[in-house]
Length: 138
Image (cartoon, rainbow, N blue to C red; front, top):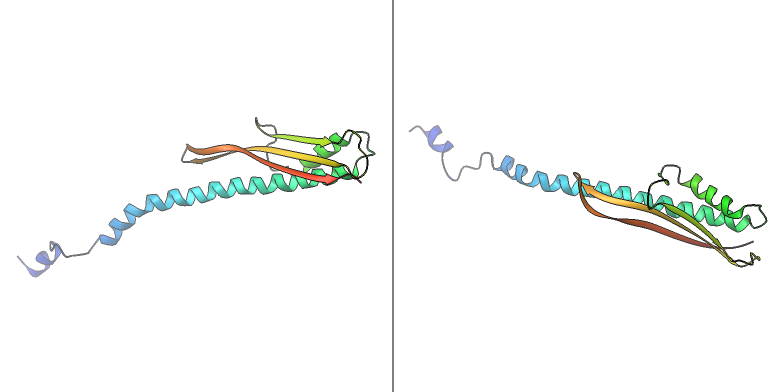
């Protein structure tokens, strides 16, 4: 055998080792990357509903004299969640006033939105994101 052939079949030859290691690690890295993306989407949805609850609570706090304060509150939340589908099952908006509606009493706005983290069509976890904001009536 020539020196080239002997070198090619030598057990200590490391040619191709990098490609083999990459092929073994790549699926793990891809799953990890898509998991981060899915978590980022769920976190973005949570930040959106938190901001929407804050906007709704502020609108509710200053709409005490309005003809429909609950409707104004819900409209403010809907406007702030324009990039989310609030019509899907599990999504909801609740504006709760103290029955006396006197200045200084609290209004509470609760926004619920469902989430699901899927990796390649396999559901990993799901549930409901909830954000609650309280504001004093003015």
